[in-house]
Image (cartoon, rainbow, N blue to C red; front, side):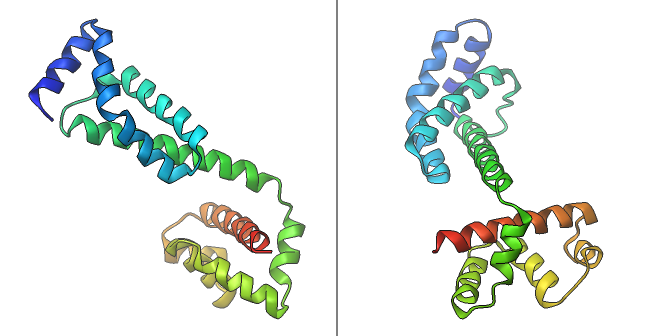
Length: 174
């Protein structure tokens, strides 16, 4: 980080808060681009960009200049966007019953199995491993927890969420 940005931060912390506009002007476009790539919705991205700069301003005194200001603000932006996705994802997942999931995942028709295989490919590596260990290898939750380095309750929660995620991916393909 340039010495000038460090100097600006010190001045902001001493009360010259209007100088924060420098960071808004310099980094808001890049932060917005990062966030929109994560949340894929312009209105949400605009709001989350504002939230990012507000959080950065509120925690400016915790900035240690161990990295550049841009790295620090990008980290705040990333965490803000990801936590928003988790909240939205959780709300969507709450509305799906276990019966709906069981019905969809136990349907062994050729069409459903094809959709399920495509959906599994969209999961991240840990999710695919967990599903494979539970369904293909028929491992217990305890065994899965040991293999993946999770607690049993965490493995159970993850399996439950992944099943819901698969349901969403399968039904979106219909």
